[in-house]
Image 1 (tube, one colour):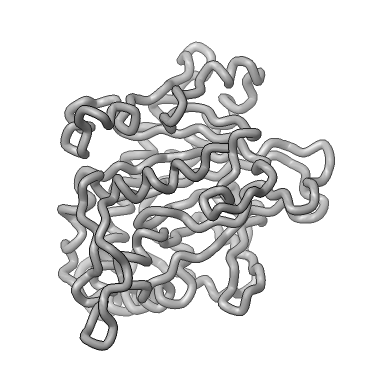
Image 2 (cartoon, rainbow, N blue to C red):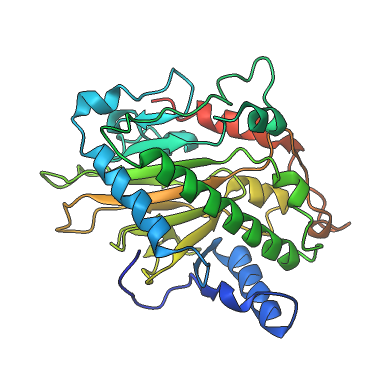
Length: 331
């Protein structure tokens, strides 16, 4: 996992190992999470319980896939509008979700979900007219990339557990029962995406990034990266700041849906990935884009409104929101 530490940042470091069971230590962790979600929408977590082996396995098989010839990778593209399998660099521009016609990101992707199991898809909201959204995964030939499917499935399961743990701590941070989110995320529709930033033979063009400025869309994102700098957030005063690189950690950030759910008490922050000057090497990051059940009703959380602060957003559903955002990213 990550192997370096950088200077202090407004993004706090949270050790989850001290948040096991009720008590003063968990209360302190919940308070740090609350303040982070209100201030910057980002935190870095350690003590998460994810083994080094699980992370390294998905890192290794991902690099093996992205090292395949381009034509071989292109054989793993999903049908139009179906976000599974491979996405080449020229089709990737996250800034489009903000109606910003930026240059394509210097990044290629591989995306999976959990809907190889038709029963899991049904429980999550699959029905006639939604077949594309709940499509099964596209897996490389195991003879070409041994262990790929197994590594992805194991990592996905571990991230499910970690996301549930984080959502329970966030419920407490919002003054809710610890299990308030449980029924809304039990049959979640989360995508797991590996971002590969290929080695560059020359510096990026002006205004081009490995990942352009964007906010995430769902409840929260859990991000592994390979320890190299480049992830930046937009500070409240409008300046780009580096997110700290911390050994054996994950970066967690809120998405737009969580901001709306909390009546904008919590923030979804713009972020991007730059290629630091002189850094032309390839990189890997892995994002677990946690998203509630497709038909989960998303309206202002009761503890986030008052007579003086009425709900600011129209009610929506998890699936309706994510589809509206995905449609904006077609390049």
